[in-house]
Length: 290
Image 1 (cartoon, rainbow, N blue to C red):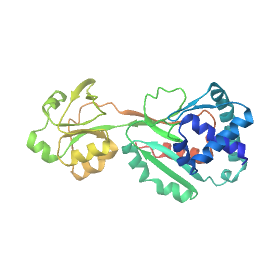
Image 2: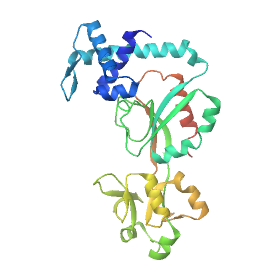
Image 3: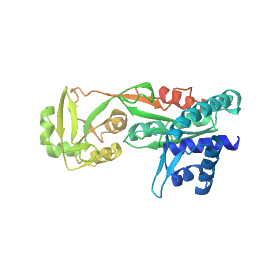
Image 4: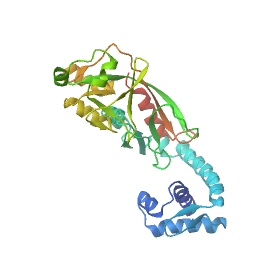
């Protein structure tokens, strides 16, 4: 690939993440190399692309305009390489996926099938329960809880994720079994929430504030707290099915209605996905929990 094309890819990334040091780490190059590539693009087009200070890197109006052309050109090149290059017959390379913890663990347990069929693929699972920025974090795909609310992302509906209220038998033996959703206010509820946001559970069509000794912004932490007998938790059914079958957790208010979560796969462009990312998207769709 020509030096200018490589430099344009670096320029695009600098606009997305205006940091020489971060881009240098991502592409395994030196700060000087990144700066030289930017100099090459500026010299070729005869424009200044960033205002540079000791603390900030701010794209200019020319950078915003060039960014549109650079992305269009490199997207077209990527598609041509997908159609005529070696990936056409045997997709290979890195695919970065943003996943929630519960769904990430679900898919990781099933990746063996994908690895056997496409040994040239590398899957990087970025698992967090907050929504990563797809562009800034260089994700090829991300699994999101809807609604998406971002017109720049292409969304593929995956399905609906059921949830269950559960608790350890020892907790219920010590504190009693709630007879209704209203009775949850008198129980230790293991809240899944972020920062200072209050935890709310919608049960039987009514939203209720819940609280307890433990809260976390990670669903696996909530899961383990429930297994430790610390209270009642609201968790994805896929995470607690095995525990319920083994008696480690038991259902709470099993006849209550808890709305499932709408789940989508998203990617950051309306162009056709490269074959390696398309294969992973198809795998995600095929193995969505039912």
